Length: 210
Image 1 (tube, helix red, strand yellow):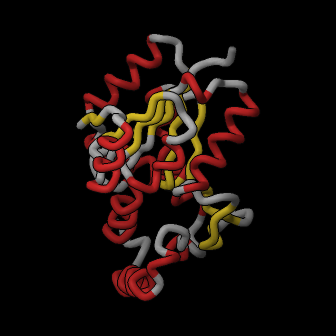
Image 2: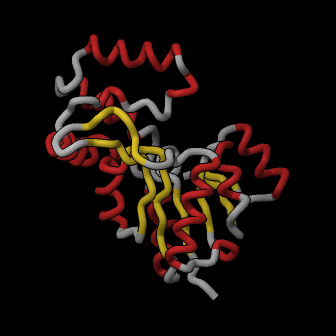
């Protein structure tokens, strides 16, 4: 029998709000992105909504070392204060029971690493921005952890590390997480969107507000 995992989404589950949006604002505020660049990027997203979660072109040409350092400052100043005490308490309860902790998010990996370190999570699955030796390319590497891809990435992790998904827990807020919920024994809808709330009521999944 494999170990039990507790899988936590980050945005609107552990953190109140969107971590990448906060970081985007932070880059503009610290003049790493000019206002004209930011507006052009947002206009592209509006014209191609199907790409809005995968498009990281605003990072193109920015230095990896500098941006990762800025991300840590952004975490300390803007993200950490938005962590939900109730969510952290829930995570702590799982750790106390010996459950392995997985952070599974579509946000940028370097932005969530400080959270992984703070809560001492076992694994982080996040969006990996592609880069060469010095700069980001504006592309992403590997699968983007959203919707069905979250399920695929979690299955791969569970196979490699031998935890039992049928005995594991998942906490998330969005309707697109329904395929992830279908893989675990104990799904929990957290601060759910109306579509996820309706689904949770249908399947009698617990609903929690952090």
